[in-house]
Length: 258
Image (cartoon, rainbow, N blue to C red; front, side, top):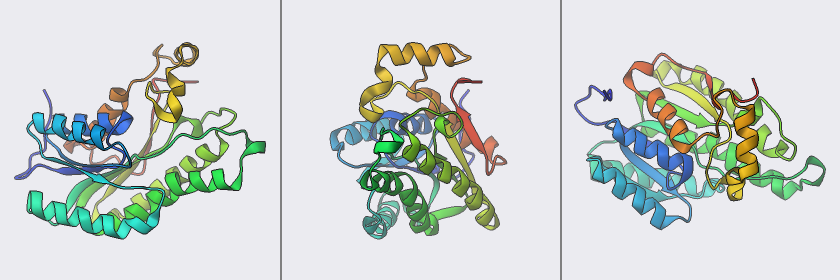
């Protein structure tokens, strides 16, 4: 039986990058548990609208807002838009959960990585999490929760992902600091680290049959991960009974490279 929130109003989650892949699954699984959703997209407007429609079909409220996480210049206006939507659609000044999921793929051997490529990874995967969370904090309820999204390759390594992985490693450190500094507001902050997931992330490299075979062979549970494997973990971490989990890195890899 699905455990929903014992509240007079439904909780609201803001999921960045919620139009496709992991973010889409997170949004839908949260809706299954009785959570309303604000999701963001960069260019995939039709996909975002489809996710909103799917959430509404589950009886929940949803809205999709454009956001380019690579540019902090747009964050103040985005926060104002979120506040406006909260007031208009929910009659509330705040939301409950922030999921920093938005990201992009990047593969380049260390020796060939340019400063521009490095800066792109920095902007999308670290600077955005730091400063978007900072801008949205006044809108997050005391007792709310934040989930950041990292990657399994902060623990194990693959050549060509150095710049991507070190930004995600920094997000893991940031998560612990947020958990400490936001403790007085009772905001729990955790980070999940997915492994190989069958999505179109990074140009769909994980959908290659050879990649599927390699991941399955190295995974204790014997298969490639799916978006719902990750979406389900996010929904579980934001469920009422998970509130005492704080400052933790939760790897979601099915036991890869143990």
